[in-house]
Amino acid sequence: MTRRTGLIGLAGAFLAACTPARFLDSVFPDDQANTLIKDVSFGDNPRQKLDVYGPADGKPGAPVALFVYGGGWNNGSRKEYQWAGKMLAAQGFVTVVADYRLTPEVSFPAFVEDVAAAVRWAVDHAAEHGGDPSRIVLVGHSAGAYNAAMVALDPRYLKAVGVDRKRIKAFAGLAGPYYFPDLSGPILKQTFAGAADDKIYQTLDYAGPASPAAFLVAGDADKTVRPRNTERLAEALKKEGVEVESHIYPGQSHADVLLNLSRTFRGRSTEYAELTGFLRRQAGLA
Image (cartoon, rainbow, N blue to C red; front, side):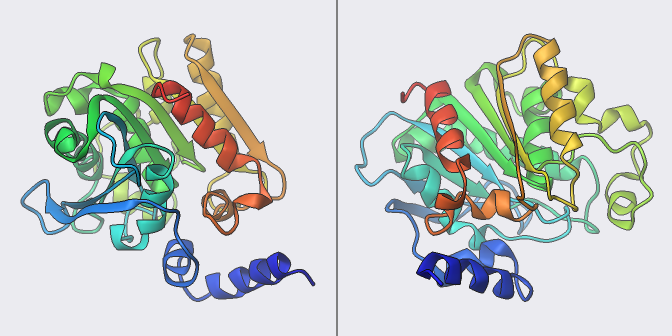
């Protein structure tokens, strides 16, 4: 057994007891990047806080990334995603990792509004930390991909916080749920049942010609969020003439498309190179 195979086996065992993100931050090394600030409030709620990471070279004028984690809209913490912030920072982005309000405290659209508010904070403050707020990319996994997609595609959220959506140069969605007209599951009921019209929360309905370029991926072994979500959103955006790069990775699960971006596991897939290459091109880094 090779060392890498052994680590992957360890990962599988460990993931049974904790989230992939907590696993990565507690066990394996991060990419080389700077932790710039932590525990900064972008709203009045205790959940509305963020951390910021920056490239190791510290040069000013770097594009800005906002990473939005998943967790079924009812759990998760930015403290488990230091590795993701540093991963993007090592690729040249001043990176914001923000918490957002969760159910059952809130329901749709509060968590989407929080992501928009974090973008507003980035526009106002990124330059203080070496970032260029005219070049922002959004990256989300699972429920976080939904939140980021809604901010990227539905112009109402950024308009409400006074941000020009042209600042958003790209959106990357990893295993996101973008279409779920049936709220039969308990998590979906709790999260969206208060919405009067299902068209309000269906991401597909907001695909339009002004949407930012999109990187959309899923694993074909994902049993949590079916890869058809990724395929349908990619198709909808392409019909509108939007630049889309989309991949369905063979044998990869819901957690794998997140784990594969980590320093330890990125060699298992082409995803890391494809994601970072896409984001760097859209942000003018390559």
